Image (tube, rainbow, N blue to C red; front, side, top):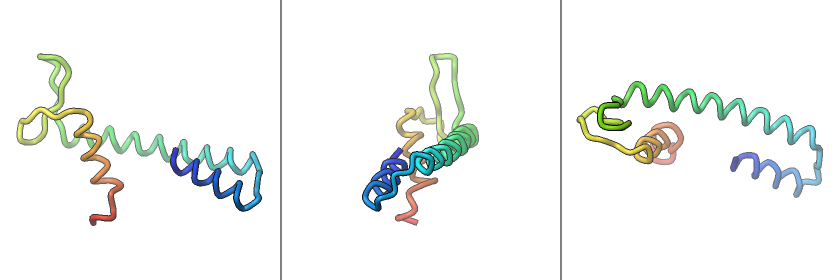
Length: 85
């Protein structure tokens, strides 16, 4: 979504106001989002176990229960946080 907002801002400040160009950018970002969601699913399946016995929860390789927020933060850091790498 941030990329789309940045693209819209760029298009408006540079004088280009083509709805077709903006629609094409949105379509490309949707494809990117679908791909990223697939990466997230794979990341969860590879790195975490799921348990349904005491409610739905995830455990890491150390057997510790983790929250969805912790999983998302770990995924983000591994996938997108390239400044630290």
